[in-house]
Image (tube, rainbow, N blue to C red; front, side):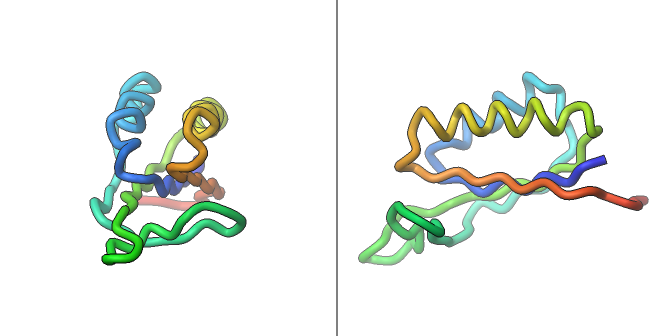
Length: 97
């Protein structure tokens, strides 16, 4: 199993939801409003007067076989609009209840 954390500009929410439905990923936890800034480029998303945009985030735990397709589809979405900002991180889940 893999845990995948997805942090994304709120403008991506419909596309992210469609990707998860397409891959039949039903279990996730989401945060509507998160702030952040990219490591190399792009504008911060801080919800402030100077930087008004915001991010959202999802975390999901998926079978190993679904992790790669999810990451690939997210990468393709990010490549379509790199200025918006989208990052995904995956790590191994050793145990869960």
